Amino acid sequence: MIRFDHVKKSFGENCILEDFSLQVREGEFLTVIGKSGCGKTTMLKLVNGLLMPDSGQIFVEGKDLAGTDLVALRRRIGYVIQNGGIFPHMTVEKNITYVPVISGRKNKIENHRLALRLLRTVGLEEEMAARYPSELSGGQQQRVGIARALAAGPRILLMDEPFGALDEITRQTMQDEILRLQKELKLTIVFITHDIREAMKLGDRMLVMEQGKVRQLDTPEQIRLNPADAFVRELVKGYTGAALAGHTPVWGPESEAEPPSPAMAHSGRNSLWEGAVDADYK
Ligand SMILES: Nc1ncnc2c1ncn2[C@@H]1O[C@H](COP(=O)(O)OP(=O)(O)OP(=O)(O)O)[C@@H](O)[C@H]1O
Image (tube, rainbow, N blue to C red; front, side, top):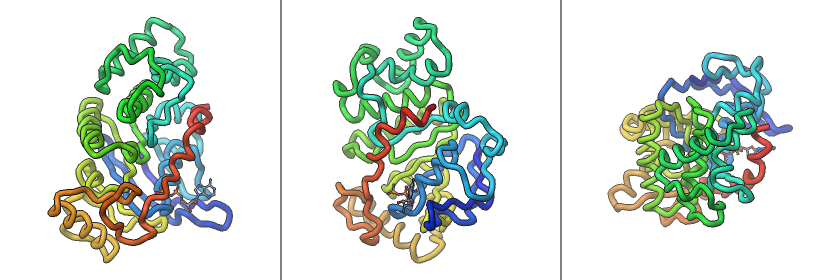
């Protein structure tokens, strides 16, 4: 479904991905974990053409992105970020139908029905369609973000720390919901997280990244049982320890657990994405 072939991506002098190769299978749930700044978001943005590689090739659904209409591609691929990335000045319904509308689907009755159906799909009441994002809880906003990403009927969903800002109970509910949606809609999902337990729970396979390189790509079970090196072992040790102690280690500001190294702590950089999303679809 997604293939990176020897991809290189730099920002100026700063090489972020070098000789990066990866295949994501159709219908797979791939979780991606690694230190802050190791290139996870860069990798994700390369999939929907928000960034282009310096060299190497990227294929989505078998097509080389180099020869693809990137605007059309972005509208076809669902994209969910922390806090949902929904537009505060639009009602929930307008948010959800945003991509269909800018893609030319102007029938108001059909769009209204679509919004109500998607609200039900993500477990929200239909009466929320008329509300503004400020009138929703964080978890509800995240659901609206997912509903919006699903509006164009994507086969691929890219999720960048979507549940990072949620409390533990809401986060677990959302994790179960996204697993249900993935099976129901047969989605291929690439999901970035800083939470090792989330990565283990959701992923059919897990990609552990370090400095723009694949450290290990395998099932959560194999990664737990056979960590490829000391870096992965450290990561898994955090998971096992936390599981025994009964809490989730989150490499973020809200974490009670120490991250494996200070650099592992999350920078919270995703908030920079807010407001940029509108442009991303155009
Ligand atoms: N548009 C840009 N211009 C210049 N440098 C960038 C740009 N986008 C990202 N970077 C740099 O590239 C590196 C990788 O960033 P990226 O966002 O991919 O990391 P990440 O692994 O997703 O981090 P985090 O977990 O903190 O979100 C960082 O050093 C970042 O500062």
